[in-house]
Length: 192
Image (cartoon, rainbow, N blue to C red; front, side):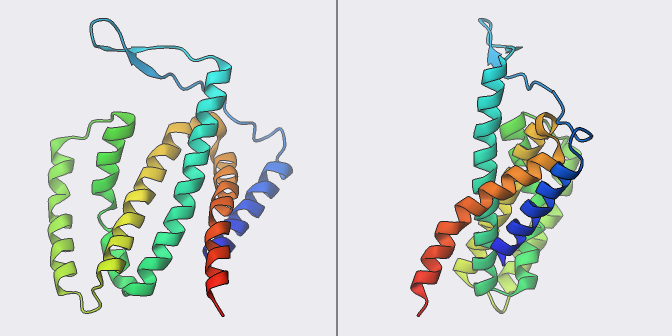
């Protein structure tokens, strides 16, 4: 299922890139890394084109691995707990996104937004505690899927301006397929 999803997004992305060649040129934003100056404050340090290409490639490989991992964790979760419980766990995505955005992009979130996430977390605790089909493996797979998915979304936000959304979707789908193939091969070898 996960491999079929990645194959279809890769095929459609490739078609879109080929069909709109020239019309859909990737943006030329040059992400500017931050470094600490002598006073300890963050200061912009311009990147060379080669540094930008390496940073984008590294982020793409990480995104491909994360996309593949979200599919695997989602399927593990669904194998152990009800789909409704997995979706309930995914309701914590805003909390994980706020934390990951702060961690990766250094974005600050207002205390009002953070405070609004508390009822969501309390609801999750109540649902998890009363879930009939609760299973530890399924629970942690769903939580892991959610955390990895949020991290993937934040990393995507970091480089979408450099590649454009279509190319980002295409490249990460291709890399996710590459990361999923060994899992699929191992699983196929385990079946009689």
